[in-house]
Length: 109
Image (cartoon, rainbow, N blue to C red; front, side, top):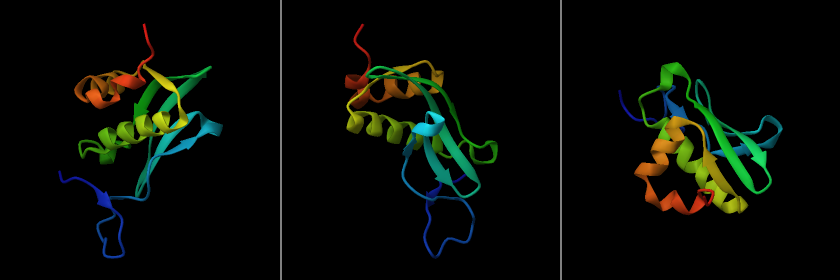
């Protein structure tokens, strides 16, 4: 499978990302709009902490790096929002272990 690209006027495959990761507080999740669905990371708010509970990419779009882009974007938004994170989702936890640039976002123990 090939990686998804950002949508452009030349895109004719239907396999692309529509925009950046955004925060949808009404649904308590970070979202990445895709042609063909929405990838998301659910969270719970506990004061200045976002507990990242579940991540999901539409089944037809899995295996293309969307999950990694989604989590990186969600963590960047958390950083911009000035909040810490606690990964309860195994995918998010593994991503953070593999990407030390996000370690500063972890809730202190």
